[in-house]
Length: 438
Image (cartoon, rainbow, N blue to C red; front, side, top):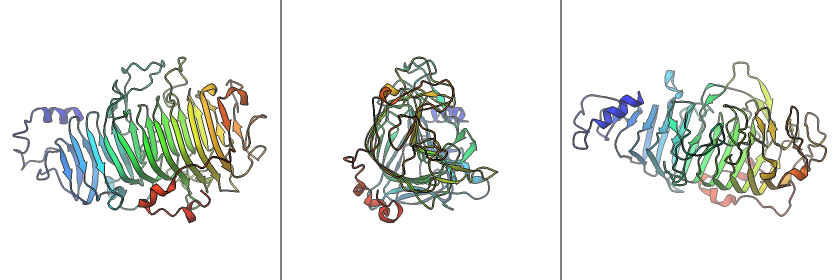
């Protein structure tokens, strides 16, 4: 369908792009096009379109095609329609490779993506597909490896690490993460092969049914992100993401009980756990730099609302690093505020069945407040684990890491202060009641 749509665009010159005003064809070329309807917004953006402030009903997939830009003015609000067959994975905002989304709000007029019933998983989310590099199954990063999105089958990946899919500032995204299956789901914000040209600053992502934000390779950076309530992982990356994230707050509130199996506040893959184990060549694996983070866990358990069985789970850990992942995490403040539900694998876990992290390239320095997990029921840690506990080698033929194998693990550095929460005043988020002590 994308190929047909692209061919149709190729056949239209700028002078006749609106000549077919009376016949809907799935292509939105202007605000007077018959395919444009603010009360039922869907289709292919096939021109440079600017939407003025106001409410829009997102009624299906709205896809920005290669070569075109969708600009949202401050005060634009997209509301995903979940009624009948319109909800779930059918509803998303998707920017294809070569397209752009310019969504620059203000503190008083943010740009909002939400849903009509405001339940996690109501819609699929915002997808940005770019041309930056991915690490391949053999560990190379030559720009030839591409992938397809889990929903929509849009291609991403390339050889342009400076690529841009647009600019998102003062943007709120909520209630997304609809699933097709346990391995195919959306996120509030999915960043597919995004380059450094994409701007991500002052974001509020909350109440996602899968991850609130996931980086699929690329080099994109993010600054000032408030990320609240994820049923799966709060902050996730894979396929060789090598960007920088700074001033990020992650919260799982006491009243949030939606959870999936294997959830955590961080999940980092050097490669891609869904596609195979760690490549032999680990030089090009994910190696992000994370600075100035504050993480509060006030609910460590819940029920998977997206499963037919309603299975109950606990958070497995604060963070999981695997498949050749490397990491530098500094100035991170962590509060484990749930005194009943402890993580099943300790605060950090550095391997699973898909392969271990690269211990010599893992730097973690955080100020921890909460229970001592070493020796707690259901928590597996190594004998030399730093308080409150890290899982080096739970089972299987993994490297038998010891503390000295890691570049740095400091779990209770009292000098660490975490993120600057004042920059999130525009969200009106009540830290005092919803994230006490953070």
